[in-house]
Image 1: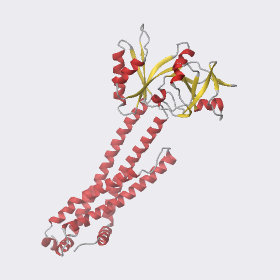
Image 2 (image 1 turned 90 degrees about the vertical axis):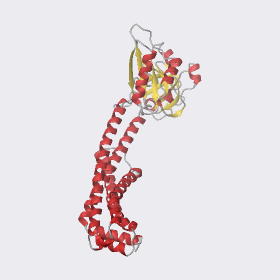
Image 3 (image 1 turned 60 degrees about the horizontal axis):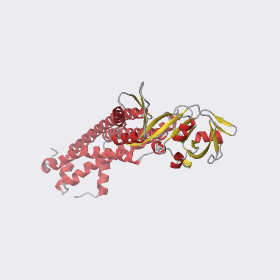
Image 4 (image 1 turned 90 degrees about the horizontal axis):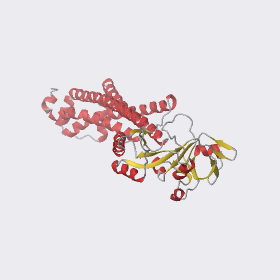
Length: 397
């Protein structure tokens, strides 16, 4: 005799509530396993968001090489040298030349700012850094070809000089030379650190920067990578290529995200350990599901024999026991996901500040793991039901 879905549900509830202790302990095992998995996924998501926020506060991941040699001519990274590096290391996103200016003082009317990061840059600097222009424009080819005295400033310097007034088109004096502000760009830390107060920055075309400092600007190249993937391998490839291009020179490479790369590696190692603990907890919960299914089969041997004798199929018998396991998984898993969400929300708002929002994908993965373990653990014991002899089952053997 086949059971309707309603009858199957009622029978499942009756059997589970018939032994509260056993059912509760089994659901607790699932709860602990799902809670461990869901908490691990939440930690991973939060850590990734924090890492992404720190990346967004900096320029694109980049590497700055320093090539120098005693009693050797200074290294010039011309267009041919840059093209050779890009051909040798395909993972490079862009390479731009950067000249740092020292002792820069900026004046607008009666306001003077003497703590400024001033850079002369090549045309593709914006692509290399990934900085967004908030108003106006970045440099055009004609700015370089015609030695135009134009500058782009960031939001910090704009506030220092103009307060809330629009900076575009205004004339400012840089070391006594008048420049026209043509663009406003977002502020980011040039040195890859979030510590300390942000310093205002300005940029000018590389040719004019060299002219302004009489050819004594401190120049180097900035090599941008698309992301942190294979950062160390790309770092090694760049170092090897520069050693090949400049034999006998001393070489030093500096990156703006090395601390984040190390942090990401530690994070991945920690997450792997936490995932292993979560999976172990789920396995323990699965063992509890298997045990309760075996115990239920042994206790209800006569019932199973009677149902088979009056026409119930093996699939229907199996479905009843698997439904019990699925229901326990649903109860334990849902409770675990809700509890972890509430605890994480409280922790990230009262204990420490972190970017957290409920993630349906993580919740679905956690519930999927719960159902997978619960149904999977009950399948083999339920399969034994199909091998029970009807006559022996009616005898209770």
